Image (cartoon, rainbow over all chains, first blue to last red; front, side, top):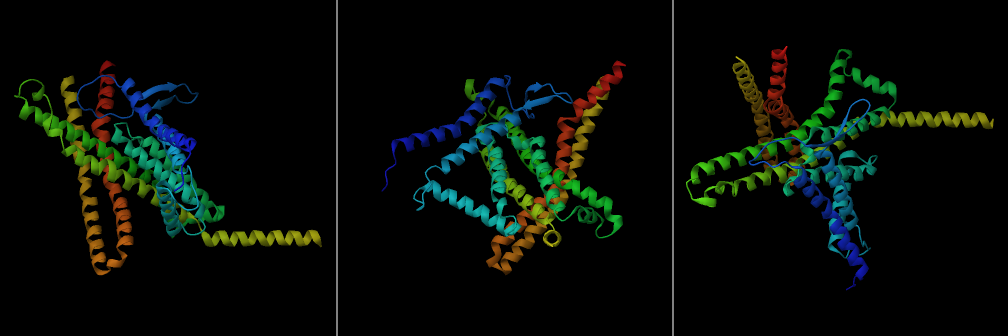
Length: 304
Length: 95
């Protein structure tokens, strides 16, 4: 049994505290900035302040702040998991970490092929960010994934990546891809090109938002129902919403945990499929071979 | 008169949101079909349960998109459209 030194344990505890600290900071920010109101309300992201910009003002909203808090928390969680790795895989956290890395590597290899092997970290990162953003509802914070702007940013990033890999087959081939299978299909192909990021962002955002809207509606309805049923009870007991115990938890299990994780998986999966599907392997290989030929010819000319 | 106009705006927004959600029928039928076929496939070949399940979830997610478009429109109609439309009405009245 190897004994861990005190310094190691202190660093461990510090990393755990730094992982939890962003969540507490988010709760404090929420408690400070939320105006006092009774009852359940459905609202979008709150705007903290706006920065003056030449073209358009930049509002700093709850979703941006919470996204950054999630990023910081995940960063320190990764540092905690990778702290004290060894060759024998002696600690539990290393087993968990190796399981995660092996699963993502296998997923990426299975869906994208050998050429995109380096994509595993990106896919894992987007999945972790999405999962933890959706799970923020569990501590009562505003989930950034129920804001369209956040998801649209990710989807635009994926769109740029798809276009980059499509362009690897040559610009002419990229343009030719729009006229397939016949020339009259060009407008539809252009529309479907732009529909990719829109549908990706709407899918994720709609799922998370619909979950929170339905949860809020059910909670408000149960509050009203319990007021009507138990309102005659005297004092504090009369105003206590008895019916709100239980059912919202079951709904939250589905909408917050299952749906959030599933949408994160689907977003990562679609990213992999679109990026690897947009890459024209044959054309790229042909282009590389042609370039090599040209280089060889040039060298021969120079040497001759 | 103004109250009547605002009432019509609110009522029509609610009606439109309800009608938009008729689109929920399509994904429901589609996903039901997909799950039924997936169950058949697993019954026939239990050894490929994993890949069938993954593919089915992907297909369900993509089939769900049309329903989610309708949902987004319904949410916009309920939470965003009434205040915007009332603002426009007030501008017209103030002119």
